[in-house]
Image (cartoon, rainbow, N blue to C red):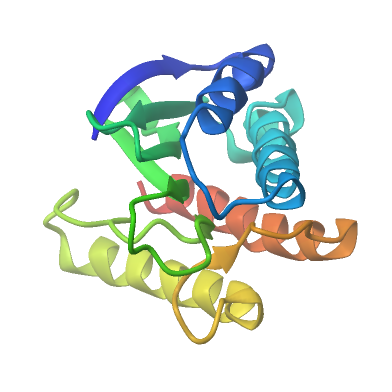
Length: 180
């Protein structure tokens, strides 16, 4: 998937939502599209807020991409490692609409499946990151769709559910900062 834009601005949520809405899908109804758009907007504005940046102690950003055939898009919610030592994905919003794709089409993968891969080459730090990831999975697991490591955003998540998903993601980002 190619990056279309990377941003640190909450207002850029509209660009991403327009990209999301432009994905052709015969089976996604208006309520599914609305739920995905609202879920993306809520997470977007939260992740790029000053509150999250201050609590994390590092810059946050979102990398938005789309595949060439316009059947999928993704938003990787990231943080910048201290001293500009690289970018770390924390969680992922993905929307997939190819012909035989089963539900859910719109998913939140929390934590990001690649978190901690190939970054530190330090067993103690790598183990600490693995524990942070496991704790985040434990906290977000109750929201996973049919045992898969993704949360369906094909229907609107309650404010309480969003809060319960945001808390371990924030704890993960803060924990990563401490490990680095």
